[in-house]
Every structure is written in structure tokens, then in C-alpha cells.
Length: 160
Image (cartoon, rainbow, N blue to C red):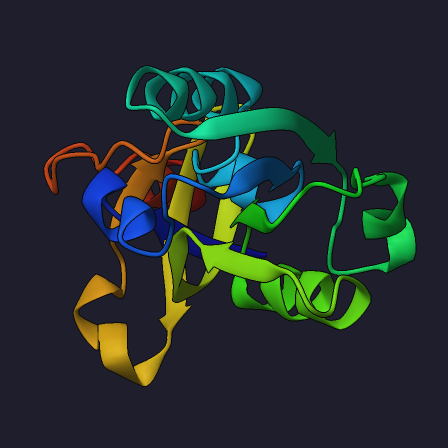
């Protein structure tokens, strides 16, 4: 699976203007496991955007938006921007299916990771070249919270 990290709220809002009518689309696969697209995080982002004056119309949590399932999101005619909470493959797919609409990317691909669902941890095993320093780092599954290097939960399980 791909491990991704969220961009800052400021980086997301720089891609919007106050006149945009926004729909959120979150991937419930890799992005959810990385803590980027958990339903609560999508809701928090929508509420924060609304509090700051943005027009958030609706949102969709879809499994594997890197597949044609992204078409489950039925955009209203007034939607002018889609905020995509997924890896770059999901973003590319949304761009392909919803041409002519502003697509807002909210995350950065870090690399490939293994997950231990029992310990609720992800370990970056094959980082992309731009994130080579992430190799071996561990994060909490579903939150993306970085673990201390002393925790090393995944390696502990492998050594047994």
C-alpha cells in the first residue's frame, strides 16, 4: 500500500477561492490507512472550511478512488472544485473523470509501506526518492501519527 502524508490546511486553501463550491472525495483505502482520509478528518476539514467561509456542498468516502468507483461521487452542476484526500493515483483518476473542475490535492505520496493491523502500525519500506529519509519510519494505522524510533513496533513483531 502507499503511505501518504497530509499537506497543511494553508496549502489546501491556497488552491481555493471563496467563490468555489466544493465537494470532498476521500479514499477509504491507502489514504484512510495513512490517516489522511479517515471520515472524522474529512468532516473536520469540511467544518473548518465552512467556518472560514468556503462553500462546502458535500463529501464522499469511497473505497479505492484510483478505480472507476470514483464515479459513485455524483457532483452537482454548481460544484467548481473537488478536494481529493488520496494518493496521487486517486487524484489522477479524479482528474480524468471530472475534467473541467478544479482538483485540489491534499497529500504527498511518501512511498510503499507495510501494515500490521494487529499492532495498528504502518512501516515505510520503499520510500520514493524524494522521501528516502522516511525508510523504516513507523506511523499509527488510521491516524498517520509518527511513532518514536524507540517504539519500533513493526520490527518487534517481525523478530519474534
